[in-house]
Image 1 (cartoon, rainbow, N blue to C red):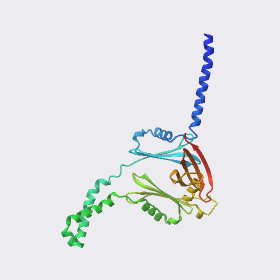
Image 2 (image 1 turned 90 degrees about the horizontal axis):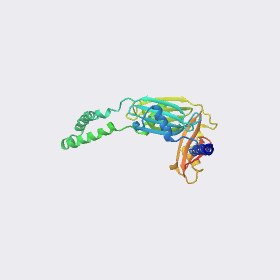
Image 3 (image 1 turned 45 degrees about the vertical axis):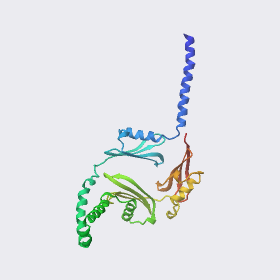
Image 4 (image 1 turned 180 degrees about the horizontal axis):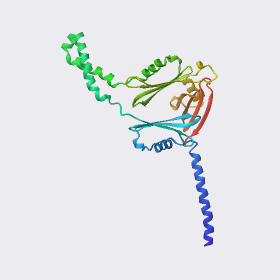
Length: 299
């Protein structure tokens, strides 16, 4: 019996060491960041939401307070959720939720609005074009009906939303830096989220897609910590070319880049995915110097 124990102990020790080494190998192969799926699962679990109940989700890689994070925004039928999750540890750095109102019922009244507008247009048309109206009344009715459909069902464009924001901020486009226009959902309706910098101020707007109403307008003073003159900021295309020049063979289809402002300093931040490698970078928006360059390999 003692001989049997003596044989078992070495075998048990070998098994434990093998398990530990496998665990260490797996950790190393996973890289320094948690996966996007893991980040999503963390957010769903914290929100007590089943993935099948998620109507839409947007996940982006971002930087908050000097930390690399996954910014996750998703919707269920009655709520909007926002999360920032540390890419290194999986820790939830920010979580917000907002109840959505059951808006967007305008389409139910479309037919009645069309009929009222159509009657008005036809009356005007008959007074100005008597011959046409008497000869082809059915054509006039059809034309009026089709012309009314567009305003009832269409929304403003991103260009229009941009113009509304610039006009409210009293700035010209030539003085604007770092313009971003994104689709969003605010105050129970579809909206454009418009943000930009002009002078020493950062502007943020939420503009209703349906009619161009300004739902939110923020203006914050931002001290410019960049040493160069603010008018000498390099363009987004120039920053993109600087980054791509370091990855032979990569093109504009392989790069994601955005202008960011962190602690009052403008930088272009982004990543290049090419040949099973991910390159993360930060470029000074004034000098073009590369402030950060990291490379991760995919298995």
